[in-house]
Image (cartoon, rainbow, N blue to C red; front, side):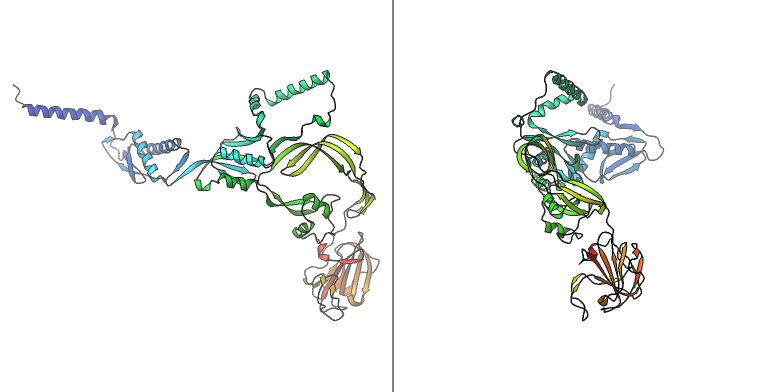
Length: 525
């Protein structure tokens, strides 16, 4: 006979139900643990509990997955502090969290604590210059603006190609004409060598069938025939905060506007300051002001001499070729006759030039607005130009060095207040204050023209040099050479002093060209 009341039986049934439910829900996470010390870890992310796992390495892998899932779901790179800590426990029966739940909890904490987002962006590198833009569309707009500065409606546009040789996402721009973009798919069918071979074969075959006929000027199309970027450009995909991105309007202004850029011009044979001024389109006075080595418009220029000039240039240089017809007077190239007995500073015109006239169809290469190369496709000469013939020296002229070691520059070249009665108010040399008896050296090799007393100069030495110049050394205490003697550069010729019209021990030094004193400091190496 069952003595149990219906109420007790119902209670036992409910208890059994809950046991079964407990096993169904919790047993999958149950793990039998060995009693060997710490064997479970409660995981905390930024101080918030996100679950319980069996080891720290599993927690770290969960964190990586959580960050990856957040970034895949957005074009932005989420940045947040991720301080992962653990509380180790020793348990006989461990109930562990499901890894998917831990990852979900971690994502919530990261989103809660995110301080800044990094947006997908593109860094445009132009040589050493770089600028950050928000998208590839902005990059294309920037490059298009650089091209449009030098074209009207010719239709040249930029295309970004993936650089397959780079590990990172790097894009390289190319320029194509709008109506040829459809032909780009052909590059995937035939490689460049195959196309070259076919083109060569067809050209040879057609040449055998039909003789070539010289084109008339009307047969050539005028206008831009090609465009490209002269500078090396890379577009690199990256993640940056919004504050580091440049608005496209600002970027276009920054990259395409002309800005003063210092450039080095190397003096070539036959160059004069006026010709250089015309060539680089900079006034002579500005070139003189930019270069300490150029005193005035009559200063001698040496072949290979480097001049600093400032030319307006944009950050991004564009190269283009233009087919153009024009009629013009032209000059023949100068014909040079070398004279091995003359110095390179010596020149003489043997024949004056006369301009010619021709009609030309030319292929002209420009870098920005500067013409860099001209190739004649067809030329019709109305009358020939007569070339200028110039005889020039080939010998390197002598150099000049400071004639004493040390010394203080006490008086420069040019106008001054006379330091003493009888002294000139226009100083024809330079003075270095130095103790009496300081060795004086020949500034350049040559032949002594005078050695002895020279009135106001006191004891003096004159030296004639092979390039026609003369140097003078005054107010000496002792002369160590004699007239007619050959001396070499750096040879000791005298001792400094205080003779003649002088206010103290010093060396007076002059350089004369064609009998006229010039500022010696402009000629010393």
